Image 1 (cartoon, rainbow, N blue to C red):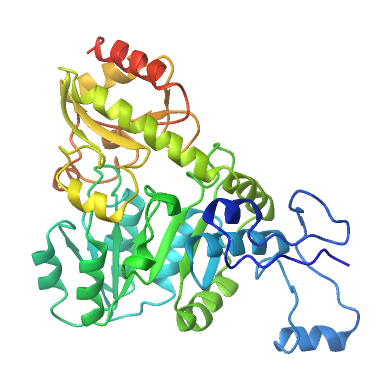
Image 2 (image 1 turned 180 degrees about the vertical axis):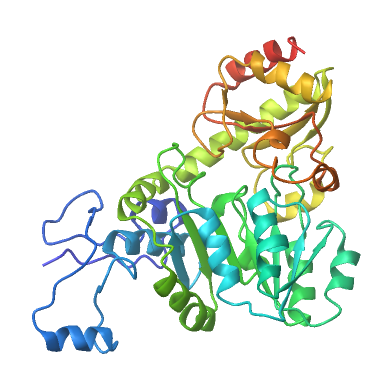
Length: 399
């Protein structure tokens, strides 16, 4: 018999991250078991029939559900304080599934303009091919939200902090406007992580993560997360969509991310503290034209960030002098920090959004988002901040 699971309802987040959702097999293993199986066997055709009719609860096929994936989903659900969680093969699979399962021809979606390029593509190019009307607004301007939501709308999508310009959007105010318009609110919370911001408590209906980032946190695996308290959304929309279209999370990736969750709290706390120290350092450098970090008072939405977030996160963006030439000289000057378009890793990673993560956008679209040729995005890791500052100072000297 498998070990009985403890009652986890009253555990604090740090305990949930280590023990939430744990289901031991008959072998009473210490670590979570990795169930690398595509299917499951039945004792009889009668049992199989009952299972597929929903009369008997059990695992049917790993495209639908898997024991290791289920443990990850339960742990994430408990951490977020949500009623439901589904995981996917990537963060973008989570974004697309959350939108496509509930939108149809003639529907209307409003999104903040400052988006990751793949999210921008889905909302402004892919969904319109299905006859879905998409409108972009300045996410920090509540008047624009109010105007766009003055007519019936089906969904609202936003990132806060946004990628890569770290705009902070008032989740509570936008959610109230959206609900008055009949829209569900989907928040991409990947930069803040569940440790620093809880959009469901601020009025959002659905929260999205790329678990490739901080949740895995060590550059090993890909995954996505969808969390909600909406029973109908899960049962009537998301589950059928995922079951039949197959954006399925890998059991192996789920197992890696279960192990990543065990250290998420301590990693995010230390990475955010490092980022704040590095941000203060960068703000004092002459070759930095401007710096964007929600933990600095110079950030345009600093007061809102303090209300919504527990700290400024592990991501910093800043403009260097000399445009693209200056940015490339700077990037070629880093010796410790790795050039990579990923983020949320224990290793500090740096990228030039205009030529990497957002290169598919037009120059005018990037300009509207504030993504200039001199913009750099830095994901601060767990290295000693003194070493990071030395590396950045040397690279700035190369401009």
